[in-house]
Image 1 (cartoon, one colour):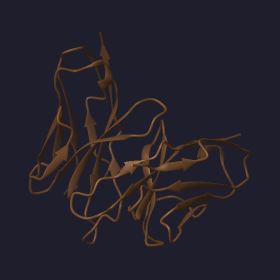
Image 2: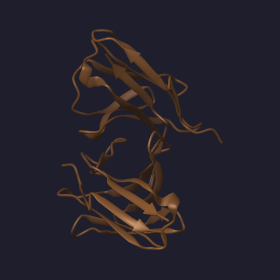
Image 3: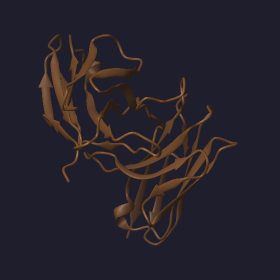
Image 4: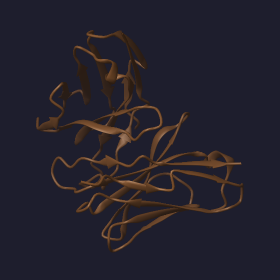
Length: 114
Length: 113
């Protein structure tokens, strides 16, 4: 039931691009993306809903393939501040609603070097 | 606008003791969810409260419990602590509704010795 993220780790130079994938075996209602820096709270980046609606940060984009239950997060022109662990959290409708539950992937560690 | 506040930030407890963690959600947010984060298991859902009612529960033993007050503040309690309970405990609040998002607090780092 836990979504699978890939890759597990990415190392970039400033200015390079990266794609992080999140795949679920269950039908999803929404996908949430977070970034967490060491010792800090996960910070919301993006939400993608079944049906196409999405909202999030201007410099980060994402896609959601409802047929494949897959989401991808696109980080372009990476900056040092992009470093951290990225998590996808999925909402799986159970009896009509997920009631506040996100099921998270194992995380992707992104490191950006100067 | 104040964020989600969790107290205390750090705790050290002995096996067998019990602990209570507190979470104050963003003003206007009535849903509070709790998660356990460990290096081995990642982020795992504990439970969710809305209007003082537990609406959802993860796969954790009964030693883990929680409650929510009328002002939406929430507490979680872990009784008979085990070494494996050492983790970062995070709470997240939400306004709910379509495209609802969850805002996390900075967490409570619990160490059981």
